Image 1 (cartoon, rainbow over the protein chains, first blue to last red):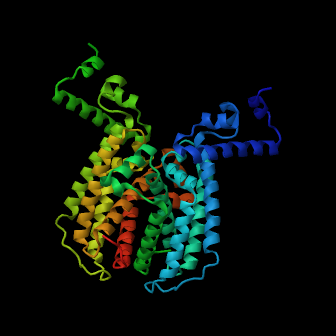
Image 2 (cartoon, rainbow over the protein chains, first blue to last red):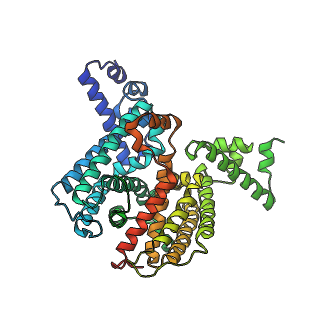
Amino acid sequence: MTTAEAFQRARRPEQKLQRRDAILGAARELARRDGVRTVSLAGIAAEVGIHKSALLRYFETREQIFLELTAEAWRDWTRALHAGLGSASPGSASPGSASPGSAALVADVFARAFADRPLFCDLLAHTPLNLERNVSPEAVRHYKLTSLGAVDEAAALVARVLPALRMAEAREFVATLASLAGSLWQIANPAPALAELYASDPALAQACVDLAPRLRRTAEILLAGLEAAGGQGQSN
Amino acid sequence: MTTAEAFQRARRPEQKLQRRDAILGAARELARRDGVRTVSLAGIAAEVGIHKSALLRYFETREQIFLELTAEAWRDWTRALHAGLGSASPGSASPGSASPGSAALVADVFARAFADRPLFCDLLAHTPLNLERNVSPEAVRHYKLTSLGAVDEAAALVARVLPALRMAEAREFVATLASLAGSLWQIANPAPALAELYASDPALAQACVDLAPRLRRTAEILLAGLEAAGGQGQSN
């Protein structure tokens, strides 16, 4: 019996779960090492040691595997936000009377929660571009409920620490920063040849981005802007 | 003589330029119709009516063709900003004494300059993710000088209309909004099956994004945040 046959013959639920986990684990490791864009279904199957057709009993497509990893990453990211903000005291509730200390804390915790999770950031850029386009509507629906739930959970933490923000504004902050984390991570992690070019050419110095400080600064600007725009009739 | 041979035999500089333009034009039309992600080198060659090997005399890779279209789109976009902001009067120069009318104008002109250019937005998301990763360093350098130049030109327009912002802050505004335009466009333009799903499922309503209003609102928040954060020691 070949490995592929053995894999196909996993019949008991716990065996199936183990194999599912092995596939996700292999995809995770390859994507961390080489970047999401370079990892193929065949590469994942080879890493697990099975045939592609056996893998397709567990996942529809390469994209479904990565969408599942993205859902997992959103949950892990909300745990980091709870750890960083769960015990923070609420700042001032009145808009305009800014709570710079609390806003700086929120900006710092969010910037680190993204920057500490390079695979999550890489996946975030691929999600609307590729991952949501080659899976069944049911798989996207499942993923979207997870990501929207994570955004809501994160927004509730922000609104608790910064009571001057309404939930709708806190959601805007979270969704905007998540979009930026995806695209800025790609800019901050150029191909090696490109990184050399940036380092060697002063005219291109501005093309370089350092992810954590850039996200922290943009988070601070967004929070200051939302506080300043607050009370101007945004609905919740 | 086949079409491919005729193409290969373009020797005069003006013939070569014509053929280069024909390739760029075909790539532009295919990408507008089907999205950047689906267009292949073979598809572009077929649209022009030549063999892939003939096309490779003009461009290194598919990615170089799209990088060239992105550079062209940056230039077209700066022209739209000049048209929208060139004759606007400068607002107040003192930070904090916000110039809401001028900021609203800047936000509106930027939001429309992106939203009116769907191919530009699509390309912006693909640039750091894919396009810059499969071309020579020289081609990336050429592209980067164009994009950095366009960001500078756009930032100078913003700083003129909103003198409370320093050039470094105006550049932050432009670069952040451009990153967001790329990723939000992808979210605002889901695959047809996904668009149906969003429309039919109230739990997913928040996953929908309307590009122009979202960019306008985020631009306003960024400008308000930069004005509020102004004078806090940002260097130029």
